[in-house]
Image (cartoon, rainbow, N blue to C red; front, side, top):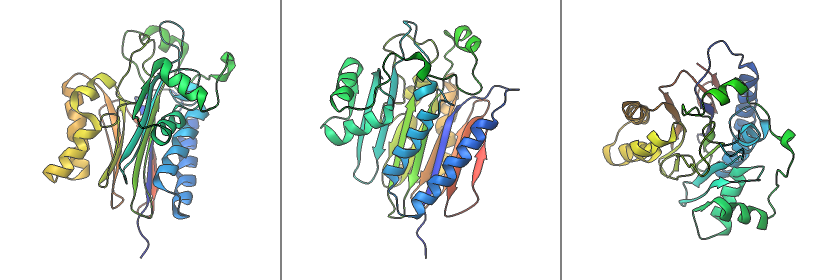
Length: 294
């Protein structure tokens, strides 16, 4: 019998009514199909997550990578993390600048240092040291994400408006991995860091489950985020969907909004969110492919 494999993606929680997200839907469908094929051919969960998040960053369709916006000082700072649940091990960067793919920088931290998280100038210097592709001084490298307008960024600088991308995967060897990347809140203060680069909050993978979160990072930190879901399952025996929904409910109780994508060790998946939609997709060896916005 074929061993289960699966991939879930998100392009951020929150959808603006009346705006056209067909490009996002098409892109997520394309990535889900390509990821499914790669996993079927034996690609590892870690490599699949790295590839998928890198594609989401490079597209400029989401508030991550090419779709990130400047902070209040006019500088773009990225956050990202990646986790290999089979070891386990993790790598992350926060407030990193001038790097084309923050998720690749996070993986480099995981594989090339004894550390889990590098921050600010130290993270930027590390990426340059490892010769990761830089953005340089070309403002045309960035794109306005689908569903976002300049007026949104300008008007919502003090409203905790957000965007994130992420992926979780299960491979045919039964290994789980997760990755998350963001440009952070629109108009955020320089140096502000949310849940995305924090393994155990914005990203988690172990032998049981892999998760990636999106939303108001402060409330995910206070709610326990992805680690809370994993703990509910490991120590309380709670089903996947029940655990994700309980964590998102707690985020809501704290005044936050957002969502989480998750896959467990047998290929079940869960999408839980309390925002007005979440850009998401799923493809695997069991069940139909899903691409959903609302």
